[in-house]
Length: 122
Image (cartoon, rainbow, N blue to C red):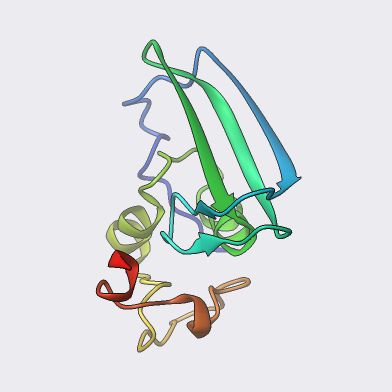
């Protein structure tokens, strides 16, 4: 398996003071912190809440992005930077509908979830 060692493996960033992660069912519409797509009510997603650098934050991650992150960033990650990290380390742009992977991308984000920047402003 190919993985990305550049994100937090270098110990450039401290982890959270505390955090809690669980898979939950959305009661309202959320945005995935990685791909910026909507997580619709009734859909499961990963919710992480905690304190980073003294600030309380909550992150919603859709299940496809969660699986990609777990496979390719086993040494840690920064929430909201999965796409940039994979581009930098592995030359993968899993959100580009024209991207042709050089190796297997587990559970890629389906093309129907990839929208143009114009669609996100609605």
